[in-house]
Image (tube, rainbow, N blue to C red):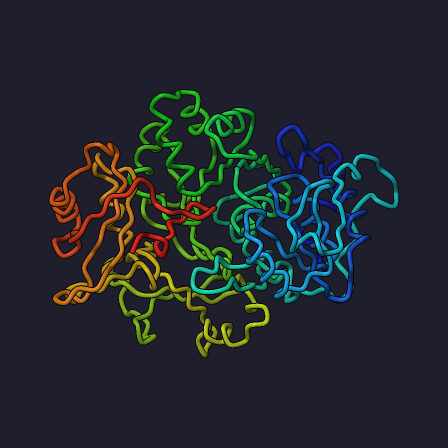
Length: 490
């Protein structure tokens, strides 16, 4: 199979590929470093683990392994020893790649280790001019990454992502976002996850552009990067929320964002209120997209389309998407109101869960559609609006099917609400009653329960108002900013 990164083989001696703080590599330097590291990796289908810190070493390690045709298991450095032990036992990597001198916890430290040296690409030489092609026999269906899910409903499962899925997703995003070699992407996302690693690092490299990783996200870092030539910003809703809060007192940030070609949010829904605040201050609209570990990217608002707040756009090229009833019957109308589970089919899908044939079979319908577990409505023009997860965000109250997401957006429009989450709990009369979990803007003077209920009823419909409001100091979130509803107090 051809390289996932054709730009590595080109004559791009001085063109920047990777920037992590003050450290950087050109395409030629990355090609040489990847080639030298690739020569030290095992063959025969063995996997390698990568200690996925947000560093130059992680990017070089992943590129080297993929160019050598070796599947990668990214490890979250914040994982506990129990989770790491499970992942390593399940994936059985032959070795771990990490930066020189980086300490590793006990479960990982027991693996054979190869240190990653980005400096190996600084000196040239005919034998290291370009990386070797992928190993003989490496094809589109062969594994590229094994990315472990969050494990909210049990031990994390390893989603096996083939080379085909990565290539087709990144090429579809190039079409949707007009992503080219002239783009410079900046972000501060972790590199153990699809968003930061596949989109945020492999995406620029596949298209011949460059990435400037912020290290730790900050609004000052965003301002510097966008003012210094970056054209695209990727982030999660918590990052854009911090941007929205900072904008009124930071004209330099507003100017930098206003000059960006594309602002993209993902991994969770961006509240409409934050959309509106960013647009009002910068004149730019944030584009949302929708994907999962198992599917990579499914939909996006296109660069040349209408950036409609609260939607994740239309299916990407090659992706089929349908909404189905609880019994699996496809919805017959895209009316912007009927809620159904999203099912997708296309070349962007994973091949299965590692060592879990039963879970893999359960995840797919008989005719090959992947059951996402996400609930949505679709407008007549094809735009998709996610309303929540089937397991935690679909509330059946008084005979209605209600998505938690639209109620959360309505609550966030109230000036007294800083954060909000919505769940359902059993109710003898309604089946389920709507519960709002609210972080007040002023903890000393939270908005009254009746006030919030009336606020929601006035914006949506009376049956969508919360029946119970519970106040918290903060909502539990994971590393990607997603609210962990199962961690809310019982």
